[in-house]
Image (cartoon, rainbow, N blue to C red; front, side, top):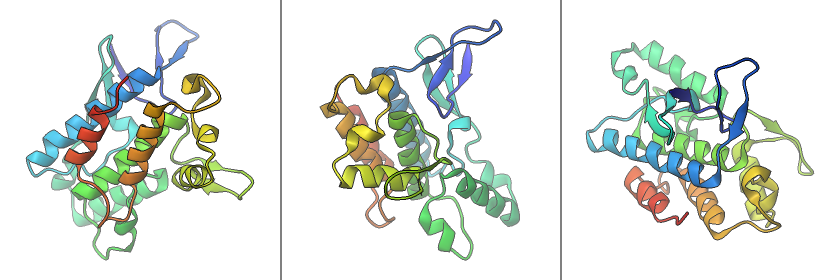
Length: 206
């Protein structure tokens, strides 16, 4: 069965109506993260940025929910106007890297893919959508700003999905995933490449 990896990181476990959804465990979410990073690494090693990384382009296959990417490399077939529209759409959804906002002619890049992956890692950890505006004591912010704020103020548990939180404190593995996601959304000159992200994700013990 093929299932789209949706933003609230739940998967359909029956085709009957009404549908029932089961949240992915933390271990399953890490495996999805590693699979997506592996797919990006495969593309980047061949000189191909994905260019349109978002949850609706991630498919989970089989009983183990192995992640596969779709829509990769389509920007190579598009006109400059089409590429600009695609990047604008990524911005509206919350996956566009900041450097693409200021570029006079934004084009897909390896580091922009890493930024989008960082946002997806945050979604896996928080079970919130990148496009959500989150209201809190510090005002309304988007997902990336909210996660950064929670980490800076020592409120990591506030942003972790309760279905995987387990206790009153975040686990070492959750802290590691959070740290990786935050590195992925650093300014472009400080952002790691996909090989570094993949290796870091693989080092998380679950």
